[in-house]
Image (cartoon, rainbow, N blue to C red; front, top):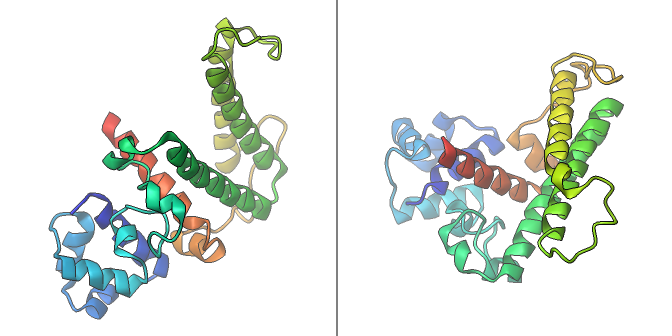
Length: 231
């Protein structure tokens, strides 16, 4: 069994808002056994994979992390590309990989901006937006510089400085965001009050963004797998 299965199975249970004890009872297994499955301590058989898929109303492919679509390979994207982070992805065409990653990023950004809209906090919206804009700027300059013949006139910061300075700016913005969400004013903005902070959970996000949430969850999973490889 792959490493995605325990994680996705646990996430689906939490989305539904049910306890491990209740899920185990309804699935006809002991809580201890379900706990071992969710932690990846023990591997289950194919029959249990199918049972879990039916229980959470998702496809086995989704449970195994092979698609971002909960119902399976429902479109041309999933027919050509496995979920980001899978080893098989290395053999896919760049255009298909681009389509997948674009979906993961844009869907996730849409959720974040809708959360910001709900928070209705000028400072947080400004700083988070600036953070994303610096990211776009940095990546644009990275791909723009791939061809040394491309004219640099569209940028006012020279090539030798832009990487370090943009990284420093993004770090300052991240620090501002950290202050705001921890209840401290900064950069001329009031802190985010406890009453303004959105109430979030996997269940809430899935309920409010049923079409977008799978992309966000896959993005989280893929980035954390990359993070773990550095630890």
